[in-house]
Length: 369
Image (cartoon, rainbow, N blue to C red; front, side, top):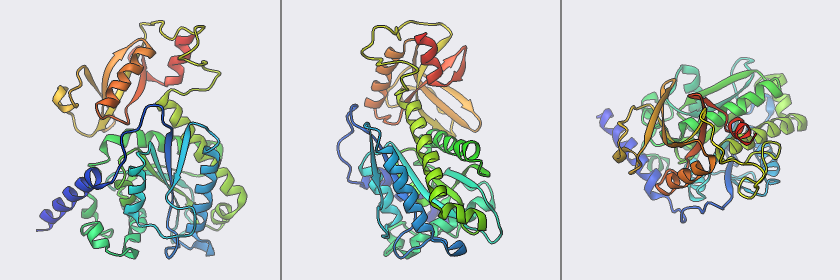
């Protein structure tokens, strides 16, 4: 009976995720890159209160600071799940992102522990790899008990039961690879630029990430229960530094998936005749990554919304699926548009040199030269 109820929960959540949200028409290619910033907790839910600090306040200040910096970019639109001290249901936070057809969802939190543990970590949706990850997710997921009708909204989901989250990864699997990419950039900035203890990119069953249908991460800025780290996160300096680190990572991610690189790489791809991006080099090939999955699918059109010329590459425990290939960046942009028209809205261009994946910026700079 428990197995049947679990399967029923998974099915209903997936159906709700993809069918029940009131979403506008598909975004035009010229529309802005939309980032939803989610300040954890709020209102009647203070979050953790380590050393007398309030997680909800720190998360909100940093979310607003990240947003203020991102809004300086004219082709970015920032949406907030909350901008004041109010309580927002977890499923509503995801619904906001889905309705906006956001390109990214970033949820900001602070951690706590009964010891003097410290360090920053970033999570993507996944099964709990160890008890520590489960405990972190359980604390954040327990917020649903403060919501009215949580039994109805989450169909019996129990934050205290590991079995309840076994099916959470199914709807997010298409975006896992991109979520990991963003999380890795954030962690790199925390560890290398700010010299924070690196608690690495991890997977855990956060229900707020499951509600979204786009690349999504949840950031644990550090431990308020640690005297030194709590004071840092509660300070204006700490909040400013952490905000800039997150902002820089988001902009780097955006550049990697949209090809909007800085002027020192190349100028006005579509308008400049001085840089011949069409010039073909046999050692550099572009492809469109359309999905990442733990499953090895047959490379047949019926598995990929009718697309032909699909290739597959295994990296770690994930299979990455690519559509088409070309030595011309401009031709690849046409392939990318076709993939998006087929429904792969989160697809993006990747580059290979002599069969090995390289950064898109490196490939374009090399080709332009």
